[in-house]
Amino acid sequence: MDCPTFIKMQQTFDQVLRIAKTTAAKFGLKEDDITEADIILDPNYNAKIYGIPDETTIAAMKFGARTEAFITDPVYVGKSLAGMIDLIKPGKISGGNGLYADLGGQQALNAYSSI
Image 1 (cartoon, rainbow, N blue to C red):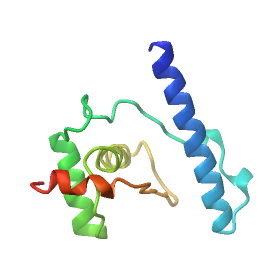
Image 2 (cartoon, rainbow, N blue to C red):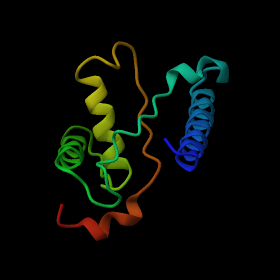
Image 3 (cartoon, one colour):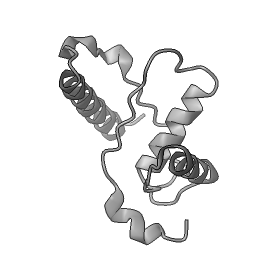
Image 4 (cartoon, rainbow, N blue to C red):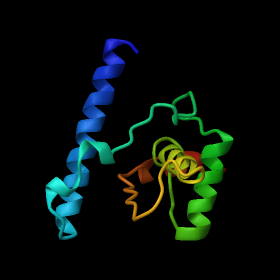
C-alpha cells in the first residue's frame, strides 16, 4: 500500500470512528463505548473502479431497497452496503446490534437511474 493510500485510509478510519462515537452519544451510550476495534474499514469493497457498480453492489442496493427501503447510490453507499452484507453472511460480523450509517450519495442517484 503506497503512502497516499495509507494516509487516506487512516483519515477515513479516523472520521468513521469520530462519527461512530458521536452517534453512540446521541443514542445514550458513552463515546468510550465505541473503540477502534469496533470499526472495520476494508479497502476490498470498492468494486475495483470508481463510479461503476459491480453485480455485488447492485444486488446489495436491491436488497437494501427491498428489505429496508434504502435508496442508495452505487458509488459509495451501495459498495459499503455490499461490503457489510458480505461480512455478515459468513459470520465475520456476528451477534449483537450493528449500525449502518448512510452518509450521503443521493446527489448521484440521477446519474444511475437505469439501475
